[in-house]
Length: 116
Image (cartoon, rainbow, N blue to C red; front, side, top):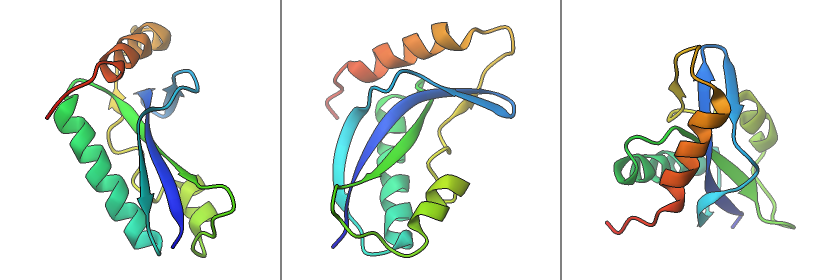
């Protein structure tokens, strides 16, 4: 079965513009999913759990296929078009809020281990 790594990437939006933090990945989780519906379900569950643990964090969910792992037809297209639900937890921040400063705060939140 295809294997993926889900991870949180601090991200925020000023309307139509989305900015992400450094390439660090937080709270990585390995999943197996046979099809796009399985990936979407895993992303939704993972994102909801992170949101529960870090309610003030603004993030997107990265979905990375394991090297050499086959993935379902349409995966690349779905990932690039955003139809896997990975951006659901991105907050829109005020225009005057600098992305870098805001994302640094989110990185600090996600770097702190929460035991729930």
